[in-house]
Image (cartoon, rainbow, N blue to C red; front, top):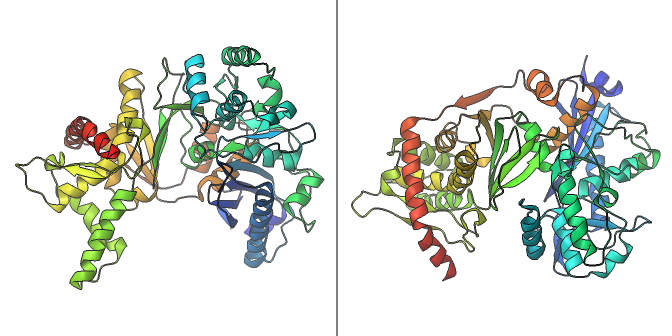
Length: 524
């Protein structure tokens, strides 16, 4: 069956993801291959002390992104898009959108980027004995209570961005379990009953009687949703009226969940690492952690398994700065080398360095790094005075540095919680040069690392796959991904090398010893 016939017969699924800088829509066919896409670029704004996107911009972005997708279908296949087999909405997780009984937004959308909830985050973490990050919805709500914000007098319900878009399109207030786990701690696919009771007692003493079960959306696992696109929702998405109602819509998810799906990392023991400007790892667990750690966030997969997440602010920016320096040297010396070639040369040359980087230690902190308790960032390096400095050892240290804080956070899981990992799937700019950073990550984490040969379309593609699962949920989500979605997708896998692991550990020992100097430098 050709693609045109699949579009006509709705053998397709649509995923739309609201990212921090771009809204993207991806239409896939029944082989999970992207057949069309659309996008809309936007930026958050700092208004009255909060990072936000206006409701007008949210609506405009949704409509414009869908219109761009519709145009792509028309130009590629000569078809007017009138429907698809299923669809789903994803967005940057967390944040705070409070509404009154009439559906009016009471304060502008407060995004994940805001760091205005430090007091609430600390008090709730202590109360629950569970790490509650500042960006979580419950932190925003409790901080509003602490600050006695006047909008609370009209508060009827609270949503995240993906849940709000889902509600616009379907009229139902539900959340995928992964998204819900970034609002309030989740246990057994419900808001944790003990913590709910603790929270409600806490705010009752402050004069508030909000009930989490009433003001937060109901939770659904992947494959569980009775929602459909309404007539009014179809007109919101496509003002021309071409889009027909009645399309099944899966539960909305966050970008963490769609990232897990897009990298086939939803089975216990599997994880994914995303490395660009920042770097984070998510590892699927078979049970909740015994203790809580400030450095580790706990969320869930889209089907409800617990996930430990380590997020670090710094990854490739300092590496890129050094590449730019060498590029500038080439320009001054009259040598023609484009940057992609420099990355290839300098990264691969690090394989010639000793695994301990000849005593070179580097810190890539452009900004603060909470995982290692560094409040302010200063790029820094030092070396043993009796060693020879060469480009191979120096750049290997820079590559180690890009994942060092992540390793420290993950080592807490491995050592203090005896957590086991079978495989990490890695993606992002750090891994574009084949086999280099991938090997060092495997050495650092002591776990095989896969890099997929065929990248999907990121989170929007992952959301489209979750929407497709709504139609085929006769098997578990891990089985669906492994046996149907990723069965023929090529990937390269490297295993840890003992010499590499030993050398990385020597580097980390020096790295930890020098952190006090890095922190002092950050204060100067």
